Length: 154
Image 1 (cartoon, rainbow, N blue to C red):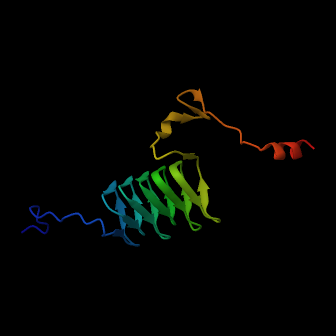
Image 2 (image 1 turned 90 degrees about the vertical axis):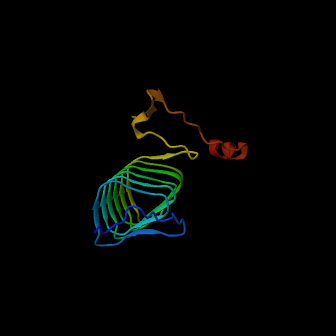
Image 3 (image 1 turned 90 degrees about the horizontal axis):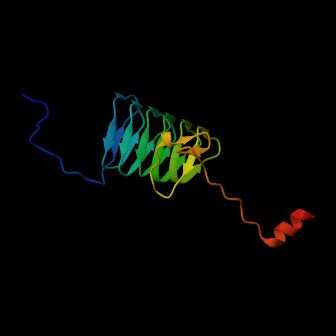
């Protein structure tokens, strides 16, 4: 007798949250159609179509891809978020990040490069030494009003 019946498929419910509790260790890649909260340890890449939350006790070693992401725990890996990435004060994050919107709270540890985009995914291998595909990155100087420019020259 099989413990899991392959013929029955559970319907996807976007209101339910998948949870990996503290004390749980997973080795391997994870993917989820819905929200995912991790409070345990994961070694592997994580792909979430909606929101990923790494709780304060979470430890992840691998790359992350999600629509939105909150990080309170420890992460070693690159992050690609199409909308909002929040790195909480308790977080220790090591790796490059790509996101449309980014919040890093005071007290958070972040070591890596940050790329802001308009919801487009980037390939981290395209960027080397301030260049993208062997072409210098475009930079724009801030716009200064004439009154500020006059005061600055005094």
